[in-house]
Amino acid sequence: MADRYSSSSTRKLFLGLFTMASILFVLSWFFVLRSTDSPHYIDHDLLPNSRSFSVIDDGNSESFSESIVESSTGNRAILGNTEGDQEVEGEEAPQNIVEGAQQQGGGDVNCNKNGKEPLKVYMYDLDPEFHFGFLDWNPEGKSVWPDIRINIPKYPGGLNLQHSIEYWLTLDLLASEFSDVPNSHAAIRVHNSSEADVIFVPFFSSLSYNRFSKIHPHEKRSRDKILQDKLVKFVTSQKEWKRSGGRDHIVLAHHPNSMLSARMKLWPSMFILSDFGRYPPNIANVEKDVIAPYKHVIKSYVNDTSTFDSRPTLLYFQGAIYRKDGGIVRQELFYLLRGEKDVHFSFGSVKKDGVNKASHGMHSSKFCLNIAGDTPSSNRLFDAIASHCIPVIISDEIELPYEDVLDYSQFCIFVRTSNATKKKFLINLIRSIKKDEWTRMWHKLKEVEQFFEFQFPSKEGDAVQMIWQAVARKVPAIRLKVNKSKRLSSSVTRKERLLRTIPSPKNFW
Image: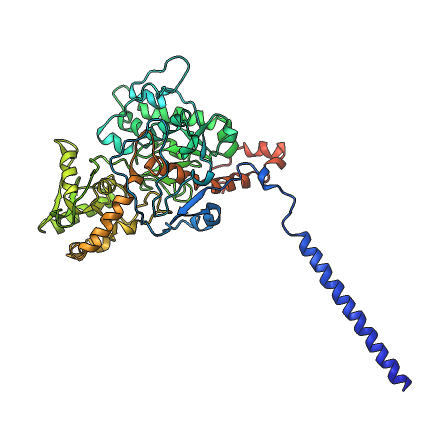
């Protein structure tokens, strides 16, 4: 009996010790895990520029930082519904302040509603030879900028206008300093670069290419090339460039042939482009750069009350037919479609009243072809939108403005080149779209057309403010890259810095 009692007591003792050890083991892991949790003593209000930009989708605001992972995949995201019940046609732009917001569907991005701050932009005070000097403006006194309250230098017309984005964005920044209501702007100019979200380089590069890219007799370099070299030397010597490695700089190169030399040296910056057709992916890509619309050249269709039946032409194209590179498809489609009734497919240019003829043709057509040319994009898409003529896009490599917040499939038809060049495929597809479907897409075009309108002063939801908002959506990714680049910069020794300055032989790697 005594042995049995002793054995029972021993088992209870061991059980108690095991239970106590298990409890201590669990508690120790609890404290270890808690010690590695996020610190709770950081005041996030003290973090620099800690505000987030806002994406409005169907009227609901959400932090862009939550969707940054999805947007960084390189896919052209579609956020859906573009429906809305308001449209802007032919309204007069306000002179001093921007009118109240006109909320649109389709994921309209708004940096200003609900107390959101506008994008803060520091603009280099470049010599007028880089910007308004192209417009025959001469500075008075020490200022390098025109007083736009008194006189606004006029941008040249014709085809120059389609790549005039540089002009509209610069004017908008200058105007932000005089606005009575600062938050009416999607972007405002600041004079302290340390307060800025981005650094703006105001070089009218497209106009420089159009006017000064040719080398004249007795010249070794064109004026455009000389200006690019001067620009690179200036920008890369600035403390703002050195501070971020250029990642937070905005460089305008909307004309596909502009900045041919400088782009290879300013590649870390954010380019604002029309497409990526003439850029290697390590120089320009959808991750870091912004695609902006062309300014349409034909007349807007103001007070459009047309219907499916009142537009007699089924399918319209007028432009250069014989192109190189991806534009060869234009020639193939010309031979496939030239015998079709109610199809207009002909050569055309801005000469001999070409703009007015194209305006009338697009306003009278149900569908308008946008076919790849020498590059994936063309102004013809935005002419079609302004005409409320349903765009038929045949360009496999095209990138579109604001496509992370705008669903183009709601008002455009996309056709692969390989399908479009099959006999009868394209014309049968277009004829299969009936009146109800066309009318729905026509209404969508009228809703979104304001997103592609350039004007001064800028208005809520126009092309100028949409571009600034597209830039703003890139800012969190820029900050991430800049901050990560600083991780070891403070611990680099003088010896290591000296070693970095020694060039490696070309075959070193």
